[in-house]
Length: 384
Ligand code: CAA
Image (cartoon, rainbow, N blue to C red):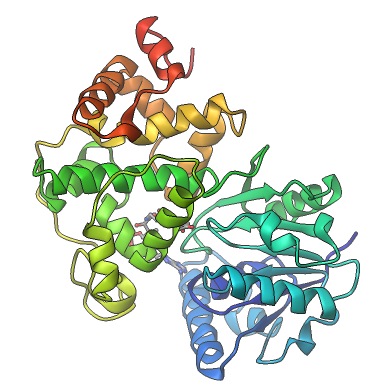
């Protein structure tokens, strides 16, 4: 099946970036949103991003020529000849289901329908369509033009053909696809991200460290591009709280009691998008690297311990390999090296001891996974 036209529903942070990478991969693109305000702002942001690439010689085609492949509309009519549609509307399950119902009615029967959801189960979305086998998760990372990863998430209904077409499309978009074997709430990326946020939050709320100290360790010791709170601000604290709730409410992850995120959300301090979150930014929507102390008492092994425990759970449940977890963190979050590799280097025994210590303080989510326990006791790592 040859894909010629890609539809994108939702022109926000993710949608406009997905439209841009689709056009850069030479596809015709139709972007639909509910208002011209959103569409015009998406257009401006795409042009700005294309200009940056063009000025640096990273793309050869002139931005105005790339733009000729993208049409914008407030009507779903433009989806009538779409071969592959990617939905990127807000993470509200009823809204997503409505969009998929509409797409199912309007797109040709051969069209594949993908969701960029970061946490909603794909099967729940697929169930409103008459083509469940053609519905799949295609999860991009912010900013989509820069981040290489695409998580490919089949539901229990998705056909092999749909999986293969999606993997192929991601490669044509110059992305690195990582396929989950089984659908799991929050996928790999956000389960790990959640665990990093929870431990960061726990350290601050329990008085072990300040926000800046946690982030200093993330950036200066683990060499991550952003601190954990900084990244949360960048992603949006509404998105962060949402994925936190979806994963915990699914019953597949023990919660870590921590109120800071929820309080920020309730105060409508949503991070970069509102100009204020855990840090202050120059203006709403304007990210600037935050200033952090060079040194910090926060132990990097402690900071990643819960995330590594989650990684072990994903491996044990046959969802992905250690290597794929590492690919997710390197290409989806720009980690300098994989999380599981970091764990090996910092010492599994060391990670295990932190988990035991925090668990003993009453945080049940830190109960060491049996794979970690086994590796720690036999002095082995995730890699040989
Ligand atoms: N279009 C084109 N170029 C862009 C761009 C865009 N939208 N955004 C950034 N760039 C370019 C900049 O021009 C700059 O290029 P040069 O190095 O050639 O000058 C480069 O990217 C770096 O950008 P900045 O100098 O502005 O800032 P930075 O060095 O701090 O990097 C960053 C910014 C690339 C975002 C980096 O901080 C990073 O990798 N952060 C981690 C991001 C991350 O983890 N994303 C995943 C979030 S989770 C998610 O998205 C999934 C979910 O479901 C929640």
